[in-house]
Each structure stands twice: as C-alpha cells, then as structure tokens.
Image (cartoon, rainbow, N blue to C red; front, top):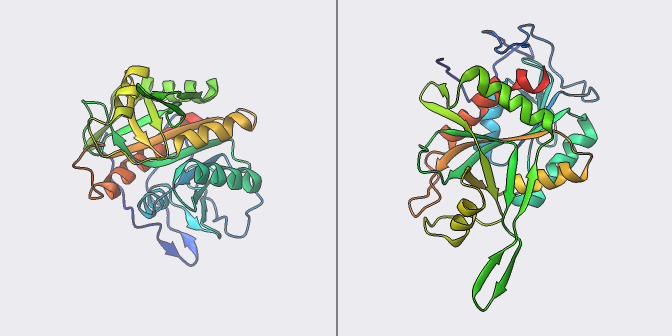
Length: 273
C-alpha cells in the first residue's frame, strides 16, 4: 500500500483543521470532528509520547493534531488522540510525560513514538519496529570479571499484544509500506546512547532475546510507568534512524520519525477498535 505524508503539520482554515482522504483499518471513522483546543477535559483514546522536535512534527502532521498548551497536541481525525513531547531524554522524562498524559486526559492506551537505533542485521534506515516487549539494560553489577547485566523485562498487557498481532495478521509481516517495512520485535532500552557496533550491551541484548531489534532511551521508562499504574496498555513504535554503530548521525531522524508516525496511524484502529 502506498502512503504519503506531509510532516509539516495540519493546515488550518478558519481555525479548524482541514481534513482530506479517508481513515484506514477495520474500525476507522471518516468523520472529521472539531478541534479540542477548548475541550481538554475529554477523555482520549490514544496518548502519544514523543521526545524530539522531529518526532513531534511527524506525529502532528500524520495524525493531524493541533497545539493545546504545555507541549500537548490533540485532534479527532482518526480517534481522540493527544500527544505530548517530553521535557528531556531518558526513562525519567518518559515516565513524567506518561504521568502528565494520564492525569489530564486518561487515554486508554499509551504509544511511545519516534526514532531508535537498529541492531537487527536485516533492518534498513527508515524501517519501523513495533514492540509490546522491552528489555531495560541499565541495571548491572561491576565485577573483576567485567560487567554483569541485570536486565529487567516489561511486557504490555495482552490487549495491546493482541492488537499488534491483529495488525500484522492483516498487513502481513513484515508489513509493507511505501519505501519501508514494519516488523514486530523487542526494544532494548537504557539511558545511554549507543554508537559502537561492538558495544558490550548489544551482545547482552542479542543474547537476552534474538528478536531484540532496536535500542532507545525511553521505552524502559514507559514500561515501568505502566507496570506501576494498573498495567495500562502500551505500545512502542520506533523508526530506525541509525544502526547504533560508528556511523551514527542525525541525518535520517526526520525520515525515521515520519515512518513511525505513519505506522501509528495505521495501528490506531486495532488499538481502539
């Protein structure tokens, strides 16, 4: 299926978002609704967390969201969606953003969207990983023999796992998009940036589970937050912007962020249907 996107944000006509095209998925709606700028008290179906400006721009453009306040953006094009950009990097920032979303908007599912480093040999820059399982790798013990990792493992509630499974059953796996593919897999997550192909932590993650496909800095925090707050459903969607090696740079971050946002748009009907 060919999909194109304008990641520069929604267009406004008379203060309202201009809508075109049709929603996709088995339970999607094609009815546009008024903006939410004056109605922040409404409960939302999907709460989206982004970290970087590129991620936020992509989410706003693809999901057709308009600004509210305090880094919140919202819209009703596909369902009631609210997004927030974190105030920093890492697990703590992700947990804080999730807390702010839950306290103000009570979304039914939380989705962490953005970029990651790919560690699976079959991946290309721009491909997307959809995860409901996360391995946090920061916990460790330093011994005379070297570092002993004590990773922690988070798995989203079954409802989220089933939704992602239905998405890939319908789309095939890998799911084909225009110029990239999406796969399901695990995310490794820690507070450090990885830019070495021979990094010890990459060997640990591959040994922990050979389906660990990407690394980021926030998914561990989201997993912990949802575990501590009633097992809220969650999903992580990451576009591959680099290969976590010595060639790591920022050049592909806008592309990877846009591809992740496209996959979220396609996934939403399965998450809230």
